[in-house]
Image (cartoon, rainbow, N blue to C red; front, top):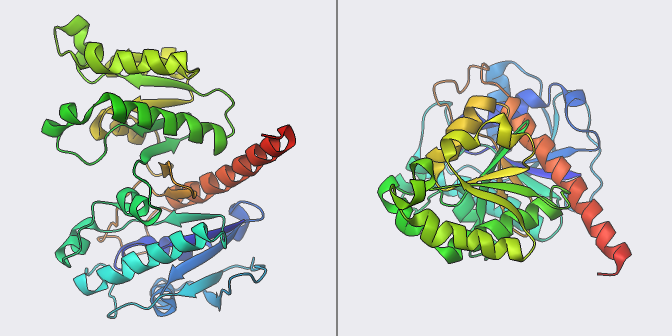
Length: 340
């Protein structure tokens, strides 16, 4: 399994997390080969700063990948625009960050690699460079020419997808429409089947308002929009429960049998997931024709160059990508055998 890894913001912890991970190759998934889409000089400078061994080999598409030793890593070179210092943002390198993402995405689309894994980027510095950028999810949707994607975070025992992502809270209610919910739930259901190997995913759906609207006394979105959509999709065969009050949905009574939760907005579902598994979770973009996973944290500029950043989330993102590759291959094989 070939995974293109983008180290993200060059001044952040992404480059060193990757370097730290390959110091223990035996802890990475079997038959998994990482290819850094990065500036080799950046990686070497960060390894030298940390005092860690690093042996880079330039990767050639189509050539069998076999590296497995301590500190060994394939790299597909993308040059920084200006030299980078750990912890010091520079807007001049914003274009470099986006070029690494474009390259990794194109490799996936061309089936040269099996998945892409992304380390954190710094949205602010990219926008400061005069480039409109709201996040990995939206950028990759544009690169893949996909209108609708779904952000899902996953940790052990819990998957949380979002109906809306990076919206001000005052705009969320207006964004919750029947077409949006129908599209999001279909993408979530389809990808849980095809990329996670779940035959009939059981999805819990949060209400938007406190107490799921309490019969219309605390808002009518559940009555007018959410419930009709869930009823329609149940008639089409989706296994859904809701709308449920978010303050009680995230309990064992409900979660013990669920495969995923759909939250209506960012801070409705992600605080619970991050409390449960921060540093051991991965961010997954659903609805793409490729597999993309990412870390659950930011660039941590204050830790860059110290070697103290935890690698758990990047390791989880790599493991999740490998599991998704295997599940997708299995699902494709079953479809082939069934003749559909």
